[in-house]
Structures are given as structure tokens and as C-alpha cells.
Image (cartoon, rainbow, N blue to C red; front, side, top):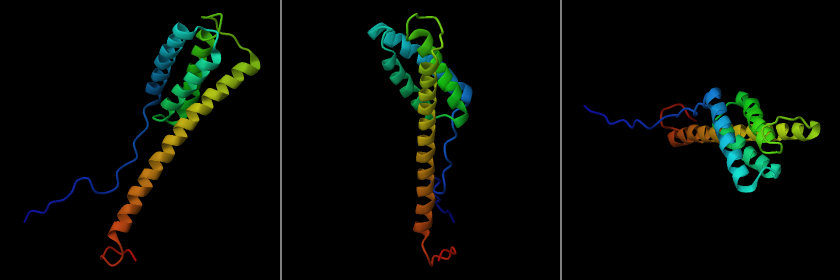
Length: 145
């Protein structure tokens, strides 16, 4: 006798995060392109716009990354922000409070992106598990009561 069994049933695993070196490569390339584009369109005298764009990039990269990738992502974004989005271009400087704020902001953006992804994946996994238990229901011989 042939019995048809649906392959798509059962708990699906939570997606694995992307490897940290790949996330950092994305941060390097994305920050380079973003800062180059902003410099071409609006110039180097608008660091707040560059900070906003790089924060969005860090958050988007955080959606597919591990928490351990966040500090490196923030530093790479900050290097391009500090080195090429503010005058003099091509020179790294350290202006205590400003750069500390920028680094903290970029780190927070990467961490928020990662935390958001973890919450979404955990909620989806929880819903898949609880729907399976509710669908089985009491009295079906599986021991749920």
C-alpha cells in the first residue's frame, strides 16, 4: 500500500545567520558604495546624512548576522564615515564625543537589526510549533489533553 506523506509538515529550523566575515565584507562594500554615492550627490559637508545611511546599512546587515558581527560592522561603517564622509576626505581623525557617539549609534543600529531578526525568527518558530500542537488537539491518541 502506498501512503502519501506531505514533506512540508513538521517543525522547520530557524534560519542560520550569515557568517561573520561575509557580513563584514558586505559592510565594507556597502559603506564604500554608500559614502561614494553620498559624496557624489551631496558632498562631504553632510555627515548626519551619511550617518543615517550607514546606520540603515548596519541595521540591514544585522538582520542576517550574528550578534558577534555587530562591533565589526559598526567599526567598518565608522571608518568610512570618518575617513570619507567628513572633510578632509581620506584622513582619519578622532573627535572624542562626536566619534564616540557615531560608533555607539552604528553599534546600536547593528544590534537592533540583529535583535529584530532574532525576534521575528523566534516568533515564527513558536507559531509553527503551537499550530502543530493545536492542530493535533486532544483525544487524537497523541497524548495531548
